[in-house]
Length: 451
Image (tube, rainbow, N blue to C red; front, side):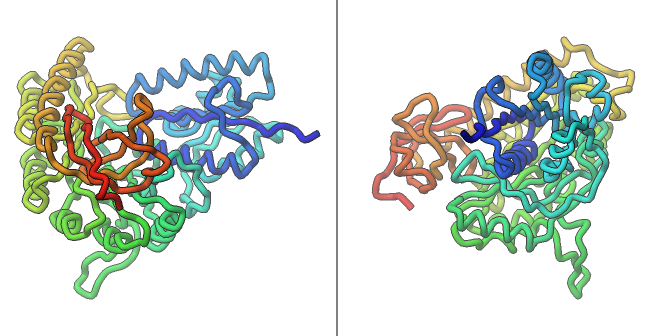
């Protein structure tokens, strides 16, 4: 009688980088013979891949952990792992807070999960948070989608924004070589993936740590150069990238996006604040005028481009007038989407100890006002799709309506239409848009136009 396979469950908090890391760790667990289960209480190994950007994400991790720690007291064979940014930030203090934990590992150690678990299964409690040089990724991710895939191009971040904990938890910038990135994308193309998203905490910094210059003295390994290296991989129809930093966003990059047919007309460029003094206090390294010029340039080259962003309200010392400058920026630009957050003090960041912290009431009020405006501008931007024919890359079934499939426009707008997923998954379908909402669309497929 063979023993039943061990089962694992991963809960992922936070950004796309974390989702990509979780897929890689799931791939490692499956090569070790584990099977994925949906329900955490059915699992023999539970892994929380954590985010520390905001306090509420961190508190949620502790509440989940508390439940599983109690379960482990009754079932000592349960393996509990905390990975990601909270693990890196808290290190051994996590073990003091939750002694039932078996493994605490920072994001740089994702590829080493098997070795670390072998130490755990030998009876050790392991903390892996030392900064390391990230070895080239030889793991095979268990990808959540059969159509779209993340591809990491640069790890870490060298910026020193005064509110952000990412550089201390994800380490210094480390770029993968163009050859390794292209090889991974070629493999994805052979496996039938149609869209890739190139990922970096600060993707425009790609290549700064790699050697190579032209005879004219221009650096050869910029992110723009990488787009030219990977854009023609067979089988891949669409290329996206995130996240960009306005300080490094160049006209040369914009021109490349306009020239390369596979690169989608969607740009995610956080602005964080519309006020120059707040931006300076945040150490962002640009002004709101510089940010506006970037968007103007994008729209000169690609008038229909979708623009999304991130914004923080209630930064220490932010006045009502300064907040209104953020509202003005949002109203002037007309974003397709803005991810908004009230400022949350993070341990070890300069802004966390400033005396000019704002009250939770002020932060909540400003967040609500910004969200209202974002919804209005997104709704206005959506109107341009009404009656248009858009090319939708079909990703999955609509979970709320099994008669529909869902996919995205090149501008990243979620779109639903009637169809059979087994027939359409991975296909590009021309769809006439019949209904527009602030953040999604519904349409009618044009049957003769499937690619």
